[in-house]
Length: 119
Image 1 (cartoon, helix red, strand yellow):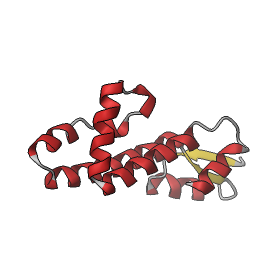
Image 2: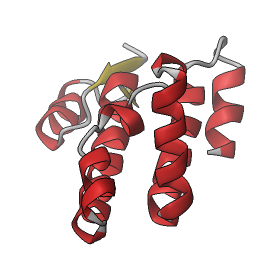
Image 3: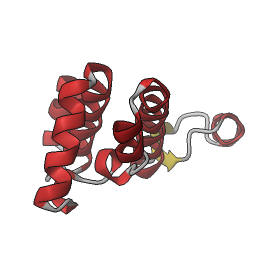
Image 4: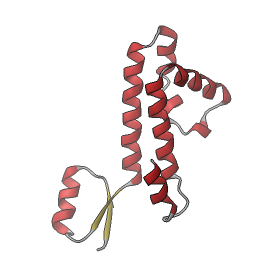
């Protein structure tokens, strides 16, 4: 066995290290994306606590920040962009999430490492 693509939880990593000592451990892309989205959601929650009432209501719509940008309507994109302009920390988290999505969307094995290095 040369490589194992897996959930990176400690028990799984330890089991693979014991059973497949020479195998390269590779993080499952969905597992990694889940962690990126959770971190983005956490920042959104922190910003929501500090936001005014109207912004806090919009910030509850997590899909504005965790959904792929292409899946939003024009109005939703405008709402998101207004919030990102007001909250720089949220904007940084959103940009990092979108950049990670570009890794996930890489069209070849050769392109993905280059995109990851840029992230």
